Image 1 (tube, rainbow, N blue to C red):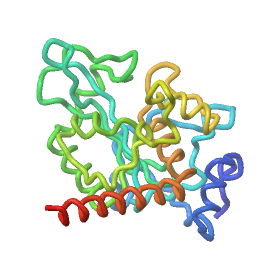
Image 2: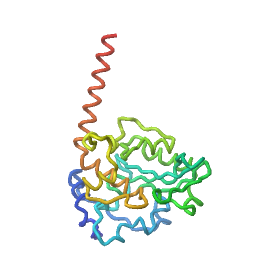
Image 3: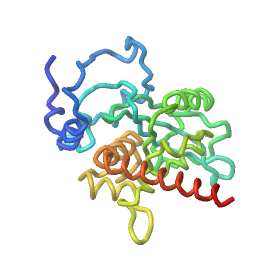
Image 4: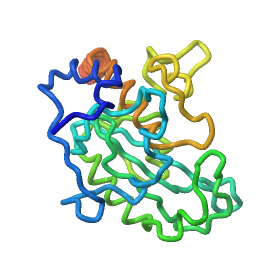
Length: 250
């Protein structure tokens, strides 16, 4: 099967692919959502505004293959709507991508409370999107299954996990808002700035696209994975040593 032109156009993911020492992308699978075997993609897959090929410019975040398998690391991004008095956030959409940036789950979610503010200018969510959305418990269960035992990548993940009422082992979290090399003297850096500076990608210029946001976080992680994992191991060794010394003193 011929490779798509997209595979040759995206230097960021090609570089990542080489770093991960893969022999090549898995064979492409062409099928419709309705007859896809064991598909866990949500109904957002076919939305025109999610199609990277519509833009004549090269998209730095476009995956180099169509391998939609669940990998050892997954990136997540959520969009929120307002409930209660409007100032309380609730999950309105959740998206997960694999290490290649391919979508493995993308669903609108119907909050348990009545939505009073769709926050469309930021979330991109409209009333019609939630009419046939997944109920919260169904989405929560699926996300829990997908992230279990895997490295979870994202930006400000504490907000996403809070919205999902889920937790994840700290040792398996890779948050681009907390990675020291990405921090500045003023504190955390917005994902859009990290994407622009490190990936040459423009995101969040209008309504947020959780697919692009998750892809950006994953690419930031993959480009720094070796150093990031090394620092994680070093930090845990230090913590273990401090605990050991504390126990010895007691």
